[in-house]
Image (cartoon, rainbow, N blue to C red; front, side):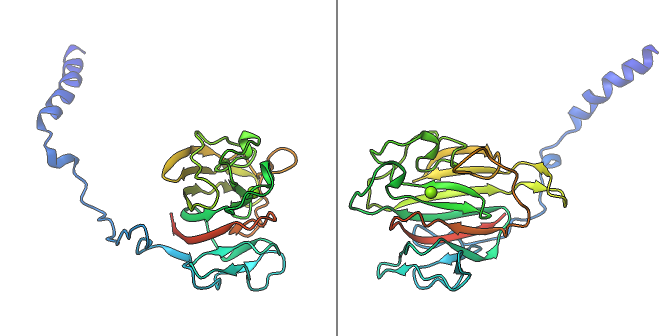
Length: 241
Ligand code: MG
């Protein structure tokens, strides 16, 4: 018995001595080489959803017809107040980059000032709002996960200035019967500042009432909200995760 114990104790010590740096090196797989782009161009492996020229990848969410939000000469588009728009394609987990601008002339207050929204899978809203010197409920201000998670800080720029969201969305996982296996998560950078740190999504982002489990038959489209305010967007791209 004594010898067995001695043997068991000595094995790890012996193994430790034999370790080499090479033994903990992983050479496979080799990450794919991509061009990371810069402030004006997306990474080479991104899907570009709007580059300033056309809305061919979007439809009017109400009518299903071609999206007709106004395309501006500066390469942006503006909410037309005839319904939200959604992508033709459906997406699971993604890294999203999107730039937005609330109107330079302040109109309205609280939730009525520069309101729009970025919805993942037509279900989970990251709020777009003019939250520069504009008080509203904290879990409904810019960069909130609407009525679920208050942003860590308010990183808003003044109205009329371009702002960025870089968002990592991990989709929730469901059984075929619609029961949820695993909650989704959102990480949000607002103007480069971390404001939502791997936050678990409770469910649908409801205006009225508590979050619900997502209907798995809802198309997994990216949706931009028409909340009656002329908010503009530009430079929208994503990478599938
Ligand atoms: Mg909104």
